Image (cartoon, rainbow, N blue to C red; front, top):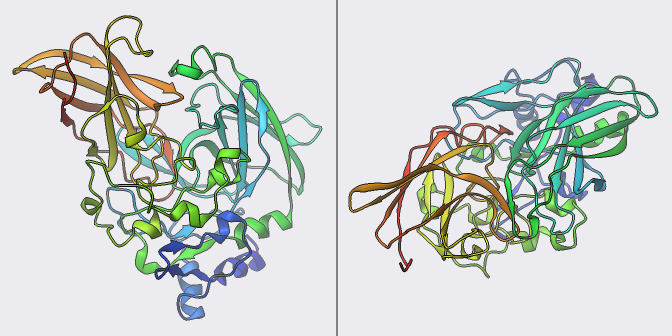
Length: 437
């Protein structure tokens, strides 16, 4: 990074939290040009923004501060990322939404450990792509057969294997830090493999073939100034607190169901709190409007609210700071071939209802002290249930105890604020209620 770029970064004003109105200004994500008022003395802001915690490469990676000793849970990060959003591109049955920003630190999950993946000196950008169904706009759990081919426009490119990732702002996507080279126009081909999850409902028999799409963008000084200069910093007093930035990616995706402004996105008056996971357990009763809650707008997040799930909804549980909604579909529903019940578990991030793919979930059902079922759940994508894990059950009675355990946590890579959550996950137990046999 040159001196001019560093100066631009360190002189960015800290993002002021709008406590009185219960909202948070996300100028760096929305594309608004509004400048936030400084949170304190400008010189103090410069010192804070210039923190170097080892995640600074010698490339275009800006020196971003990190939270010291973050909690083993979802937490408020130090800053709001800035990025360039490009128009959606068709890729076979899929639609891909490209996003490009500066190279930065993320974490890969190995077993039960989140391992930092720092940008190298050669990296120039962080490429991100969300994959969705063009008909419903639903984000899809693309995790296999992924490849990015990157090179100057009109020339052969180099292949890269991106990581499935989760982010508070972008939700589930694929991405990686990538080297480019000289300024110019670059062409990126994105290959998406088939969806490995079972597909049901409107998704049945779809997404079985790989798709490929191509987009271009210009890498130059204007781009670097745009993404690095657009970083916004939260007040340091809120770094590491329980909470999350509001999801914003869907606002840029050009789908008719996702056209919402931040005022709509932050309003919770029309939604009730009917969740087993009480907000006060997270200690964020003063943060509901500022950092996001379960009550995100129905069309802005990846998964439906708990109360919108079909079937008989059971008690909601939490483990590793993930929220687990459980529902039972009655005998002979469209989810089964015969006369079975359908037991579905929908794991999601707190605050933002983001999907948690690439995990192993086992379930045991005990009746009168005897284990009657012990199986692994199948990951499934459905137009109503969204991404979930499920099993067909021949018998299910009120009073049955369903224990959900997690042999492996979500194997997705994480952006800041998610890297310490969803790792150590203890089993949870739900007692079946409202199911007639």
